Structure formats: structure tokens, C-alpha cells
Image 1 (cartoon, helix red, strand yellow):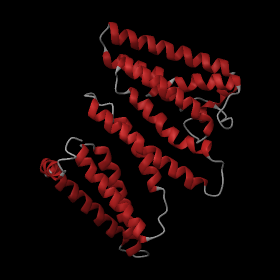
Image 2: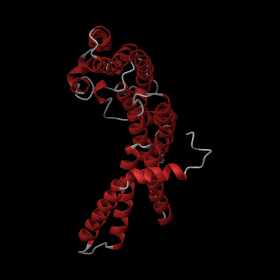
Image 3: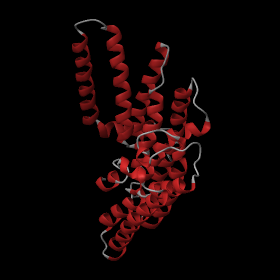
Image 4: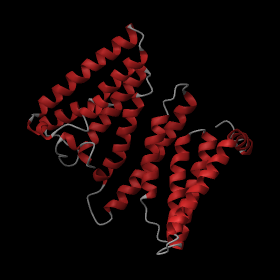
Length: 289
């Protein structure tokens, strides 16, 4: 993670003075060294985890290589996104080609090495893509934020479906990171919507309750985490509305927190019983899922 962050998050402004060819060569050499090391460790030394981590670092270099080539050739989808160091920071349609190529290379490496942490990089890129695709579809206008929010939410759904299908197909856990970043795209877009009615806010709360139930059905805690955050957001909103400008507001909110802790303890204590009940409650037609 430190190595990947160094070559993505913390690339300094002095890199702006390099040519696109220089950036691509640096990324290629960096990636090649880690890929060779990963291959040797995995296939010859039998050290699967260190080898897989090296291959993951190599995959993280792909956006830099593609950026350098595009920068040198002046080929951008949409507008020129600017410095490579802005890739993790800003939403721009110009990053789209970098993301597509990284996903393609990631799929190949995943097939060759079958190391689940490779999906971490793929998941991050998918999350970025869920935001960067909107500027390619529409130009900035009055409802631009709303369009971006909707695109992110809709984009997250097929990512979650792919995560579920991989959960069914593979013994190794390739799905965790897809679930996480799919939920970030879907739940993030959903939670940024401004419900104008109390019914809309209540439906948002019910959807988050459904996510909590889904976590029991799928045995995936990521749905529980996001569902609880959504429910707490709604309860906090209710507490604020009921106790607005009241000295009792901190106590009301603390009370809600204690209530959630108690519910959490009850769920933990009865987890197996709830899982059995959830399985029994599913119609036989859906049991195969």
C-alpha cells in the first residue's frame, strides 16, 4: 500500500516537468520489476502472498503508463485532465482510458495469478470510473451534480452483481473488494440525494434496513456497515428535528447511540439463530441463490 500510494497519491508537482514518455518509462520499469519479482516469488519460491502483493503493485503502475502515453500523444477522452498527481484527487473524464486499460490488465493478471488482493486495485479503479464516467456523458450544467450522483448509484449495481456472482463461483474471496467499492458507488450516490419529503427520507431508512437484512442473507458484513450508517444518519436527522434548539439534543443522540449498541449486541448474541431464520424464510425458488 505504501509503494502504491507513493506512485499514485503522493506524486509531487515536480513530475509535471517530465515528458509523457519519461512518465510512461518510469511506470513501465517500476511495474516490470515488481511483476518479475512477483512471478519469481509465486512460481519458483512458492511464496504466494509476497509474490501476489508484488504483482498488485505492478498492476497499480498501469494508470501511470497509460497516462504517460496519452500525455505524449495528446490523446484524451474528453478534455486533458492535467497532472497525473491529480488522478486520485479529482473527478475528470480524461482518466477514463487509464481506468479501462487498468481493468483489462487486472483481469489478465487475476486470471494468471489468482491473487484476491488484485481485486483491490480493480475495485478502486471501478469506484473512480463510477465518478469519472459522468463528465464523458454530459457537459457541466445546472443539474450536473445530480447526474453524477445518479451515474454513480446506477454504476454500483452491476459491480455488486458481479461481486455476488464471483462469491458463488470461487472459493477464494475475490468478492470482498468488489462489494466494498460497489457499495461506495451505490450507497454514496444514494445517500447524497436530497429527499424533499419525509416519506423519501423514511424510504431511504427502509432501504438501509434492507441492506442490513441482506448482510444476513449474503453473510457479508459490508452491507451491515453501510446499512447501519444509513439508519444512524436517518435517526440522527429525526433526533435533530425533534430536539432542534433543545439542550436535550446531545442526550437524545447519545441515547440513540446506546440503543444501537444494544441492538448490535442482541444481533451478535443471536447471530446463528437469525441466520437459520433467514435461510428458512427464503422461498424454495430462491434457495439456490
